Length: 131
Image 1 (cartoon, rainbow, N blue to C red):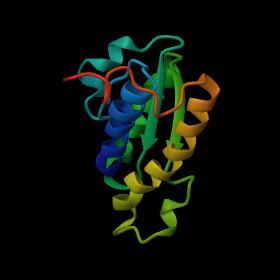
Image 2: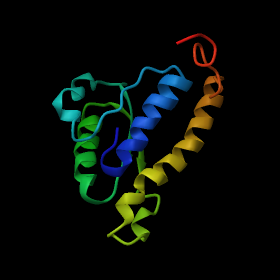
Image 3: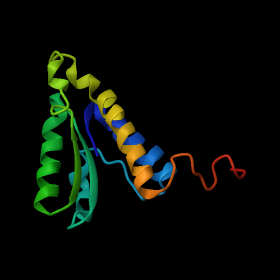
Image 4: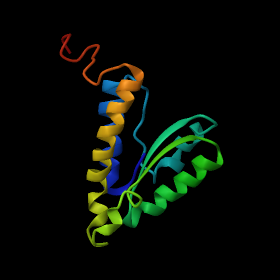
């Protein structure tokens, strides 16, 4: 889940890493769209990865975080502000959130693949069958 410039990183994580490379059911959800249906799946233990942006869309992320925490969703939060994005000018910092999130996710994804004993290069169909 993410918003603003970080939504692209959230979408890439869902489609390319979790679904394609790790075979984990996933959906990319924009924080602003979360309350238009997807929030109904939130219950104790429901896993979420939220890429929290800085700047104009941060309130959308904050609202989703509060709801997930209230209803005991399992939240992995990657907060651009806590990673130092606020050290950039406020005029441009938010535009670098997606890049920062992608860098952090590279490390996360390697650790996930190792923990699951499922290399990021493993495929069922891609490059193996006609499609």
